[in-house]
Amino acid sequence: MMFANTSLLRRTLFGAMILATGFAQSQQPAAPAGQGAAAGQAGPRRVGPGGAAANTLPYDLLLQKGHVIDAKNNIDRVTDVGIKDGVIAAVGDNLRPQDALKTIDVSGDYVTPGLIDIHTHVYASTGEKSLAGDESVWPDGFTFRNGVTTVVDAGSSGWRNFEDFKAHVIDRSRTRVLADLNIVGAGMRGRGPAFEDNIADMSGEQTAWMAKRYPGVIVGIKSAHFTGPEWTPYIEAVKGGNLANIPVMIDYGSNRIERPLYDLLTKYLRPGDIYTHTYSGLRGEQNPATLGPAANILAGRARGIYFDVGTGNGSYRFTIMVPLIKAGFKPDSISTDLHFESMNQGTKDILNVMDMFLAMGLTVQEVVADTTAHPAHEIKQDQLGNLSVGSIADVAVLSEEHGNVGFWDVSGVRLPGNTRLHCELTLRAGRIVYDLNGISMDVWDQPVTSDARMAGHWTSFTPRPPLPDELTPRQK
Image 1 (cartoon, rainbow, N blue to C red):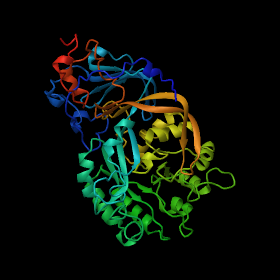
Image 2 (image 1 turned 180 degrees about the vertical axis):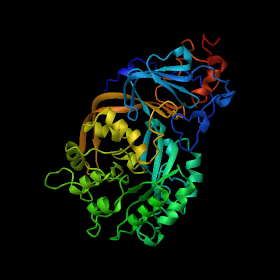
Image 3 (image 1 turned 90 degrees about the vertical axis):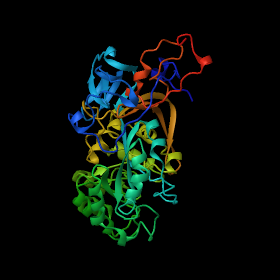
Image 4 (image 1 turned 135 degrees about the vertical axis):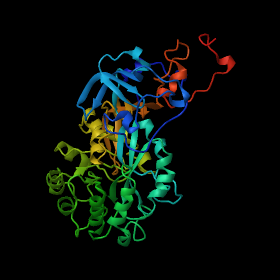
Protein backbone atom coordinates (compact mmCIF):
# COMPACT_ATOMS: atom_id res chain seq x y z
CA MET A 1 0.00 0.00 0.00
CA MET A 2 1.51 3.33 -1.07
CA PHE A 3 0.87 6.66 0.63
CA ALA A 4 1.83 10.23 -0.11
CA ASN A 5 3.12 11.73 3.14
CA THR A 6 4.44 15.23 2.52
CA SER A 7 5.79 15.67 6.03
CA LEU A 8 7.95 12.55 5.80
CA LEU A 9 9.59 13.70 2.56
CA ARG A 10 11.45 16.41 4.41
CA ARG A 11 12.73 14.17 7.20
CA THR A 12 15.82 12.04 7.60
CA LEU A 13 14.84 8.97 9.57
CA PHE A 14 16.34 7.56 12.71
CA GLY A 15 18.71 10.23 14.03
CA ALA A 16 21.14 9.66 16.87
CA MET A 17 19.77 10.06 20.38
CA ILE A 18 21.03 13.07 22.33
CA LEU A 19 18.55 12.77 25.12
CA ALA A 20 18.50 12.50 28.90
CA THR A 21 16.81 10.81 31.79
CA GLY A 22 13.80 11.25 34.04
CA PHE A 23 10.08 11.75 33.68
CA ALA A 24 8.09 13.92 36.08
CA GLN A 25 4.41 13.13 35.87
CA SER A 26 1.45 13.69 38.16
CA GLN A 27 -1.82 11.81 38.03
CA GLN A 28 -3.63 14.90 39.29
CA PRO A 29 -5.23 17.08 36.61
CA ALA A 30 -3.31 20.15 35.56
CA ALA A 31 -4.00 23.53 37.12
CA PRO A 32 -6.34 25.81 35.19
CA ALA A 33 -4.64 28.07 32.71
CA GLY A 34 -2.98 31.02 34.35
CA GLN A 35 -2.21 29.39 37.69
CA GLY A 36 1.18 28.10 36.57
CA ALA A 37 3.75 28.00 39.34
CA ALA A 38 1.20 28.74 42.04
CA ALA A 39 -0.38 25.38 41.34
CA GLY A 40 2.94 23.53 41.27
CA GLN A 41 2.81 23.16 37.50
CA ALA A 42 5.65 25.46 36.51
CA GLY A 43 7.95 28.19 37.73
CA PRO A 44 11.68 28.87 38.01
CA ARG A 45 13.91 25.93 38.84
CA ARG A 46 17.61 25.92 39.70
CA VAL A 47 18.07 22.35 38.53
CA GLY A 48 16.22 20.96 35.54
CA PRO A 49 14.81 17.46 34.92
CA GLY A 50 17.32 14.65 35.23
CA GLY A 51 19.81 17.02 36.86
CA ALA A 52 20.10 19.27 33.80
CA ALA A 53 21.14 22.84 34.42
CA ALA A 54 18.40 25.43 34.70
CA ASN A 55 17.13 26.82 31.41
CA THR A 56 17.24 30.62 31.25
CA LEU A 57 15.70 30.76 27.77
CA PRO A 58 11.97 31.46 27.25
CA TYR A 59 11.29 27.90 25.99
CA ASP A 60 12.53 24.38 26.55
CA LEU A 61 10.96 23.17 23.31
CA LEU A 62 9.61 24.92 20.25
CA LEU A 63 7.29 23.17 17.80
CA GLN A 64 7.59 25.25 14.67
CA LYS A 65 5.28 25.75 11.67
CA GLY A 66 2.72 23.05 12.50
CA HIS A 67 -1.00 23.29 11.75
CA VAL A 68 -2.33 23.88 15.25
CA ILE A 69 -5.88 22.67 15.99
CA ASP A 70 -7.14 23.75 19.40
CA ALA A 71 -10.94 23.65 19.55
CA LYS A 72 -11.22 25.29 22.96
CA ASN A 73 -9.30 28.36 21.79
CA ASN A 74 -10.65 28.35 18.21
CA ILE A 75 -7.18 27.96 16.70
CA ASP A 76 -7.01 26.31 13.29
CA ARG A 77 -3.95 27.58 11.44
CA VAL A 78 -0.22 27.21 10.95
CA THR A 79 1.65 28.70 13.90
CA ASP A 80 4.26 27.87 16.56
CA VAL A 81 3.98 26.41 20.06
CA GLY A 82 6.52 27.16 22.78
CA ILE A 83 6.80 24.97 25.90
CA LYS A 84 8.61 25.68 29.17
CA ASP A 85 8.70 23.78 32.48
CA GLY A 86 5.97 21.37 31.44
CA VAL A 87 3.35 23.92 30.37
CA ILE A 88 2.39 25.80 27.23
CA ALA A 89 4.39 29.03 27.29
CA ALA A 90 3.31 30.60 23.98
CA VAL A 91 1.22 29.96 20.89
CA GLY A 92 1.93 32.41 18.11
CA ASP A 93 3.60 33.20 14.82
CA ASN A 94 7.34 33.48 14.29
CA LEU A 95 8.52 32.32 17.70
CA ARG A 96 12.32 32.40 17.58
CA PRO A 97 14.39 29.20 17.55
CA GLN A 98 17.15 30.98 19.44
CA ASP A 99 14.73 31.33 22.36
CA ALA A 100 14.43 27.54 22.76
CA LEU A 101 16.77 24.78 23.89
CA LYS A 102 15.28 22.55 21.20
CA THR A 103 13.36 23.41 18.03
CA ILE A 104 11.49 20.81 15.98
CA ASP A 105 10.18 21.58 12.51
CA VAL A 106 6.67 20.08 12.32
CA SER A 107 5.61 21.79 9.11
CA GLY A 108 3.09 19.68 7.22
CA ASP A 109 1.83 18.08 10.44
CA TYR A 110 -1.04 18.83 12.79
CA VAL A 111 -0.24 19.95 16.34
CA THR A 112 -3.09 19.18 18.72
CA PRO A 113 -3.64 18.83 22.45
CA GLY A 114 -2.83 15.36 23.73
CA LEU A 115 -5.74 13.08 22.83
CA ILE A 116 -8.24 12.00 25.50
CA ASP A 117 -9.94 8.60 25.29
CA ILE A 118 -12.85 8.60 27.75
CA HIS A 119 -13.84 4.95 27.25
CA THR A 120 -11.06 2.44 27.92
CA HIS A 121 -10.41 -0.56 30.16
CA VAL A 122 -6.97 -0.48 31.79
CA TYR A 123 -7.36 -2.35 35.11
CA ALA A 124 -4.83 -4.95 33.90
CA SER A 125 -3.32 -6.12 37.16
CA THR A 126 -5.55 -8.53 39.08
CA GLY A 127 -4.86 -11.80 37.26
CA GLU A 128 -8.58 -12.46 36.86
CA LYS A 129 -10.03 -13.17 33.43
CA SER A 130 -12.32 -10.16 33.29
CA LEU A 131 -12.24 -6.47 32.48
CA ALA A 132 -11.10 -6.09 36.08
CA GLY A 133 -8.00 -8.03 35.05
CA ASP A 134 -6.60 -9.79 32.02
CA GLU A 135 -9.14 -8.42 29.53
CA SER A 136 -7.96 -4.87 30.21
CA VAL A 137 -4.75 -3.44 28.72
CA TRP A 138 -1.82 -1.65 30.35
CA PRO A 139 -2.26 2.00 29.38
CA ASP A 140 1.28 3.08 28.54
CA GLY A 141 1.64 0.38 25.89
CA PHE A 142 -1.30 1.77 23.87
CA THR A 143 -1.48 5.49 24.55
CA PHE A 144 1.59 7.52 23.62
CA ARG A 145 2.12 5.83 20.25
CA ASN A 146 -1.36 7.11 19.32
CA GLY A 147 -1.02 10.64 20.69
CA VAL A 148 -3.14 9.80 23.73
CA THR A 149 -2.04 11.40 26.99
CA THR A 150 -5.21 10.87 29.06
CA VAL A 151 -7.51 7.87 29.36
CA VAL A 152 -10.60 7.27 31.45
CA ASP A 153 -11.13 3.72 32.61
CA ALA A 154 -14.86 3.21 32.08
CA GLY A 155 -16.04 1.25 35.08
CA SER A 156 -13.58 -1.63 35.31
CA SER A 157 -13.40 -1.03 39.06
CA GLY A 158 -16.05 -0.20 41.63
CA TRP A 159 -15.79 1.33 45.08
CA ARG A 160 -14.63 -1.99 46.57
CA ASN A 161 -11.56 -2.42 44.34
CA PHE A 162 -10.79 1.08 43.04
CA GLU A 163 -7.91 1.61 45.46
CA ASP A 164 -6.27 -1.59 44.20
CA PHE A 165 -6.66 -0.26 40.65
CA LYS A 166 -5.16 3.05 41.71
CA ALA A 167 -2.17 1.46 43.45
CA HIS A 168 -1.32 -1.00 40.69
CA VAL A 169 -2.17 0.93 37.51
CA ILE A 170 -3.04 4.61 38.00
CA ASP A 171 -0.13 5.49 40.26
CA ARG A 172 2.38 3.55 38.14
CA SER A 173 1.39 4.88 34.72
CA ARG A 174 3.00 7.74 32.85
CA THR A 175 -0.30 8.16 31.01
CA ARG A 176 -2.78 10.25 32.98
CA VAL A 177 -5.30 7.61 34.03
CA LEU A 178 -8.67 8.80 35.30
CA ALA A 179 -11.62 6.60 36.21
CA ASP A 180 -15.36 6.22 35.99
CA LEU A 181 -16.31 4.18 39.05
CA ASN A 182 -18.67 1.30 38.36
CA ILE A 183 -21.98 1.48 40.22
CA VAL A 184 -21.37 -2.20 41.02
CA GLY A 185 -19.02 -2.25 44.00
CA ALA A 186 -16.98 -5.13 42.56
CA GLY A 187 -16.68 -3.49 39.14
CA MET A 188 -16.43 -5.55 35.97
CA ARG A 189 -15.27 -8.81 37.53
CA GLY A 190 -17.73 -10.72 35.36
CA ARG A 191 -21.13 -10.50 33.76
CA GLY A 192 -24.22 -12.06 35.22
CA PRO A 193 -25.71 -12.33 38.71
CA ALA A 194 -22.45 -12.72 40.60
CA PHE A 195 -21.17 -9.26 39.70
CA GLU A 196 -22.53 -6.94 37.00
CA ASP A 197 -26.19 -7.92 37.44
CA ASN A 198 -25.94 -7.91 41.24
CA ILE A 199 -28.38 -5.19 42.27
CA ALA A 200 -27.48 -5.74 45.94
CA ASP A 201 -23.94 -4.47 45.19
CA MET A 202 -25.13 -1.24 43.54
CA SER A 203 -24.87 1.74 45.88
CA GLY A 204 -24.90 5.39 44.91
CA GLU A 205 -23.83 6.39 48.41
CA GLN A 206 -20.79 4.12 48.60
CA THR A 207 -19.76 4.99 45.05
CA ALA A 208 -20.00 8.72 45.78
CA TRP A 209 -18.05 8.24 49.03
CA MET A 210 -15.13 6.74 47.12
CA ALA A 211 -15.37 9.33 44.35
CA LYS A 212 -15.12 12.14 46.87
CA ARG A 213 -11.98 10.56 48.35
CA TYR A 214 -10.23 10.95 44.98
CA PRO A 215 -11.59 14.08 43.30
CA GLY A 216 -10.09 14.75 39.89
CA VAL A 217 -9.04 11.12 39.55
CA ILE A 218 -12.51 9.57 39.75
CA VAL A 219 -14.31 11.71 37.19
CA GLY A 220 -17.55 9.80 36.60
CA ILE A 221 -19.79 6.85 37.42
CA LYS A 222 -20.45 4.00 35.00
CA SER A 223 -23.29 1.54 34.61
CA ALA A 224 -22.68 -1.23 32.10
CA HIS A 225 -23.80 -4.63 30.81
CA PHE A 226 -26.91 -4.86 32.99
CA THR A 227 -29.37 -7.42 31.64
CA GLY A 228 -32.26 -7.12 34.09
CA PRO A 229 -35.52 -5.20 33.67
CA GLU A 230 -35.01 -2.95 36.71
CA TRP A 231 -34.10 0.74 36.71
CA THR A 232 -31.97 0.31 39.83
CA PRO A 233 -28.50 0.64 38.22
CA TYR A 234 -29.38 3.96 36.64
CA ILE A 235 -31.17 5.35 39.68
CA GLU A 236 -28.19 4.48 41.86
CA ALA A 237 -25.67 5.81 39.34
CA VAL A 238 -27.43 9.16 39.10
CA LYS A 239 -27.74 9.27 42.90
CA GLY A 240 -23.98 8.82 43.14
CA GLY A 241 -23.40 11.40 40.42
CA ASN A 242 -25.47 13.95 42.30
CA LEU A 243 -23.69 13.30 45.60
CA ALA A 244 -20.21 13.53 44.06
CA ASN A 245 -21.05 16.14 41.39
CA ILE A 246 -19.70 14.03 38.55
CA PRO A 247 -21.28 12.75 35.31
CA VAL A 248 -22.70 9.30 34.66
CA MET A 249 -21.78 7.19 31.61
CA ILE A 250 -24.20 4.48 30.50
CA ASP A 251 -23.52 1.33 28.52
CA TYR A 252 -27.17 0.31 28.40
CA GLY A 253 -26.67 -3.44 28.45
CA SER A 254 -29.56 -5.59 27.21
CA ASN A 255 -32.43 -3.94 25.38
CA ARG A 256 -35.46 -4.46 27.66
CA ILE A 257 -39.00 -3.32 26.90
CA GLU A 258 -39.43 -2.63 30.62
CA ARG A 259 -36.83 0.16 30.46
CA PRO A 260 -36.96 1.83 27.03
CA LEU A 261 -34.06 3.98 25.93
CA TYR A 262 -36.36 6.97 25.51
CA ASP A 263 -37.14 6.95 29.22
CA LEU A 264 -33.49 6.60 30.19
CA LEU A 265 -32.53 9.64 28.14
CA THR A 266 -35.48 11.84 29.05
CA LYS A 267 -36.40 10.85 32.61
CA TYR A 268 -33.46 9.25 34.42
CA LEU A 269 -30.23 10.75 33.10
CA ARG A 270 -29.36 14.39 33.68
CA PRO A 271 -28.13 16.96 31.18
CA GLY A 272 -24.38 16.42 30.96
CA ASP A 273 -24.53 12.66 31.44
CA ILE A 274 -23.01 10.45 28.73
CA TYR A 275 -24.55 7.72 26.58
CA THR A 276 -21.85 5.50 25.06
CA HIS A 277 -22.02 2.93 22.24
CA THR A 278 -24.20 5.42 20.37
CA TYR A 279 -23.88 3.67 17.00
CA SER A 280 -24.42 0.08 18.10
CA GLY A 281 -28.06 -0.05 16.93
CA LEU A 282 -28.71 -2.57 19.70
CA ARG A 283 -31.11 -0.44 21.73
CA GLY A 284 -33.22 1.26 19.10
CA GLU A 285 -30.98 4.26 18.30
CA GLN A 286 -31.96 4.16 14.60
CA ASN A 287 -35.34 4.96 13.09
CA PRO A 288 -36.14 1.86 11.00
CA ALA A 289 -38.20 3.87 8.50
CA THR A 290 -35.85 6.80 7.80
CA LEU A 291 -32.62 5.07 8.88
CA GLY A 292 -31.76 8.33 10.61
CA PRO A 293 -31.67 8.94 14.36
CA ALA A 294 -34.58 7.59 16.38
CA ALA A 295 -36.74 9.85 18.54
CA ASN A 296 -35.03 8.60 21.70
CA ILE A 297 -31.54 9.87 20.93
CA LEU A 298 -32.89 13.07 19.37
CA ALA A 299 -34.78 13.74 22.59
CA GLY A 300 -31.67 12.91 24.60
CA ARG A 301 -29.54 15.36 22.66
CA ALA A 302 -32.16 18.06 23.02
CA ARG A 303 -32.07 17.46 26.77
CA GLY A 304 -28.29 17.85 26.93
CA ILE A 305 -27.12 14.23 27.01
CA TYR A 306 -23.70 13.69 25.43
CA PHE A 307 -23.32 10.89 22.88
CA ASP A 308 -20.01 9.02 22.89
CA VAL A 309 -18.74 6.51 20.33
CA GLY A 310 -17.12 3.63 22.27
CA THR A 311 -16.70 1.33 19.27
CA GLY A 312 -15.26 -1.59 21.26
CA ASN A 313 -15.66 -5.13 20.03
CA GLY A 314 -19.37 -5.08 19.26
CA SER A 315 -20.80 -1.59 19.40
CA TYR A 316 -20.59 0.02 15.96
CA ARG A 317 -22.14 -0.81 12.62
CA PHE A 318 -21.72 1.14 9.43
CA THR A 319 -25.39 0.54 8.64
CA ILE A 320 -26.11 2.62 11.73
CA MET A 321 -23.19 5.06 11.71
CA VAL A 322 -23.28 6.22 8.11
CA PRO A 323 -27.01 7.08 7.91
CA LEU A 324 -27.02 8.76 11.35
CA ILE A 325 -24.02 10.89 10.49
CA LYS A 326 -25.45 11.80 7.09
CA ALA A 327 -28.59 12.89 8.92
CA GLY A 328 -26.47 15.16 11.13
CA PHE A 329 -26.26 13.03 14.27
CA LYS A 330 -22.51 13.32 14.83
CA PRO A 331 -20.81 12.18 18.04
CA ASP A 332 -19.98 14.51 20.91
CA SER A 333 -16.85 12.49 21.72
CA ILE A 334 -14.87 9.77 19.97
CA SER A 335 -13.58 6.91 22.13
CA THR A 336 -12.44 3.34 21.65
CA ASP A 337 -13.70 1.08 24.45
CA LEU A 338 -10.18 -0.30 24.27
CA HIS A 339 -9.62 -3.77 25.70
CA PHE A 340 -7.83 -7.02 24.82
CA GLU A 341 -10.21 -7.89 21.96
CA SER A 342 -11.05 -4.52 20.43
CA MET A 343 -7.40 -3.52 20.06
CA ASN A 344 -6.89 -6.34 17.51
CA GLN A 345 -10.24 -6.07 15.74
CA GLY A 346 -11.96 -3.22 13.95
CA THR A 347 -11.37 -0.60 16.64
CA LYS A 348 -7.57 -1.01 16.90
CA ASP A 349 -6.80 2.39 18.46
CA ILE A 350 -8.16 5.91 18.71
CA LEU A 351 -6.46 7.15 15.54
CA ASN A 352 -8.10 4.33 13.58
CA VAL A 353 -11.50 5.31 14.96
CA MET A 354 -10.83 8.95 14.08
CA ASP A 355 -9.88 7.85 10.56
CA MET A 356 -13.12 5.88 10.37
CA PHE A 357 -15.09 9.04 11.04
CA LEU A 358 -13.04 10.94 8.46
CA ALA A 359 -14.16 8.30 5.96
CA MET A 360 -17.78 9.02 6.96
CA GLY A 361 -17.47 12.73 6.29
CA LEU A 362 -16.20 14.37 9.46
CA THR A 363 -13.33 16.83 9.14
CA VAL A 364 -9.95 16.61 10.82
CA GLN A 365 -10.98 19.57 12.95
CA GLU A 366 -14.09 17.72 14.13
CA VAL A 367 -12.36 14.47 15.03
CA VAL A 368 -9.64 16.37 16.91
CA ALA A 369 -12.23 18.34 18.88
CA ASP A 370 -14.04 15.08 19.67
CA THR A 371 -10.84 13.63 21.16
CA THR A 372 -9.59 16.72 23.01
CA ALA A 373 -11.72 19.64 24.20
CA HIS A 374 -15.08 17.87 23.94
CA PRO A 375 -14.30 14.81 26.09
CA ALA A 376 -12.43 17.01 28.58
CA HIS A 377 -15.59 19.07 28.98
CA GLU A 378 -17.81 16.01 29.30
CA ILE A 379 -15.79 14.75 32.29
CA LYS A 380 -15.57 18.26 33.81
CA GLN A 381 -11.81 18.47 33.30
CA ASP A 382 -11.67 21.54 31.10
CA GLN A 383 -8.06 22.21 32.06
CA LEU A 384 -7.19 19.30 29.76
CA GLY A 385 -7.57 19.00 26.01
CA ASN A 386 -6.30 22.44 25.03
CA LEU A 387 -3.14 24.42 24.28
CA SER A 388 -3.95 27.48 26.40
CA VAL A 389 -0.94 29.34 27.76
CA GLY A 390 -0.37 27.97 31.27
CA SER A 391 -2.02 24.62 30.55
CA ILE A 392 -0.07 21.42 31.02
CA ALA A 393 1.84 20.67 27.82
CA ASP A 394 0.22 17.42 26.70
CA VAL A 395 0.64 17.57 22.92
CA ALA A 396 0.22 15.29 19.90
CA VAL A 397 1.85 15.85 16.51
CA LEU A 398 -0.08 14.01 13.81
CA SER A 399 0.82 13.43 10.17
CA GLU A 400 -1.77 12.79 7.48
CA GLU A 401 -1.37 10.17 4.77
CA HIS A 402 -3.61 9.47 1.80
CA GLY A 403 -4.15 6.24 -0.06
CA ASN A 404 -6.44 3.26 -0.38
CA VAL A 405 -7.36 2.41 3.21
CA GLY A 406 -10.30 0.67 4.80
CA PHE A 407 -12.13 -0.02 8.04
CA TRP A 408 -14.34 -2.86 9.20
CA ASP A 409 -17.16 -3.13 11.68
CA VAL A 410 -18.64 -5.74 13.98
CA SER A 411 -20.79 -7.13 11.17
CA GLY A 412 -17.67 -7.91 9.15
CA VAL A 413 -18.24 -5.37 6.39
CA ARG A 414 -15.76 -2.85 5.02
CA LEU A 415 -15.87 0.93 4.73
CA PRO A 416 -13.37 2.31 2.18
CA GLY A 417 -11.44 5.43 3.07
CA ASN A 418 -8.52 7.52 1.83
CA THR A 419 -6.97 9.12 4.93
CA ARG A 420 -4.96 7.90 7.87
CA LEU A 421 -3.60 9.95 10.73
CA HIS A 422 -0.33 8.82 12.30
CA CYS A 423 1.24 9.99 15.52
CA GLU A 424 4.67 11.47 14.87
CA LEU A 425 5.36 12.84 18.34
CA THR A 426 3.68 12.79 21.76
CA LEU A 427 4.50 15.09 24.66
CA ARG A 428 3.35 14.39 28.20
CA ALA A 429 3.77 17.35 30.57
CA GLY A 430 6.15 19.04 28.17
CA ARG A 431 8.49 16.15 27.53
CA ILE A 432 8.66 13.82 24.54
CA VAL A 433 7.41 10.31 25.34
CA TYR A 434 7.01 9.01 21.77
CA ASP A 435 8.84 9.88 18.55
CA LEU A 436 7.92 7.77 15.52
CA ASN A 437 10.55 8.95 13.05
CA GLY A 438 13.17 10.53 15.30
CA ILE A 439 12.20 14.08 14.34
CA SER A 440 13.31 15.36 17.75
CA MET A 441 16.83 14.02 17.23
CA ASP A 442 19.88 15.21 15.35
CA VAL A 443 20.92 13.33 12.24
CA TRP A 444 23.76 11.01 13.17
CA ASP A 445 26.38 12.40 10.76
CA GLN A 446 25.37 16.07 10.84
CA PRO A 447 26.30 18.89 13.25
CA VAL A 448 24.41 18.91 16.52
CA THR A 449 21.66 21.49 16.94
CA SER A 450 21.05 21.24 20.68
CA ASP A 451 22.93 20.57 23.90
CA ALA A 452 22.46 16.96 25.00
CA ARG A 453 23.24 17.97 28.56
CA MET A 454 20.02 19.99 28.59
CA ALA A 455 17.85 17.36 26.89
CA GLY A 456 16.10 16.44 30.14
CA HIS A 457 14.13 19.64 29.72
CA TRP A 458 12.35 18.41 26.59
CA THR A 459 12.46 14.61 26.47
CA SER A 460 12.02 11.51 28.62
CA PHE A 461 14.30 9.26 26.55
CA THR A 462 17.69 8.08 27.78
CA PRO A 463 20.57 7.77 25.30
CA ARG A 464 23.37 5.26 25.56
CA PRO A 465 26.84 6.75 25.26
CA PRO A 466 28.60 5.72 22.01
CA LEU A 467 31.23 3.04 21.96
CA PRO A 468 34.72 4.25 20.94
CA ASP A 469 34.53 2.64 17.51
CA GLU A 470 31.12 4.23 16.90
CA LEU A 471 32.37 7.80 17.22
CA THR A 472 31.74 9.77 14.06
CA PRO A 473 34.10 12.43 12.73
CA ARG A 474 31.96 15.15 14.29
CA GLN A 475 32.32 13.49 17.73
CA LYS A 476 36.06 12.87 17.41
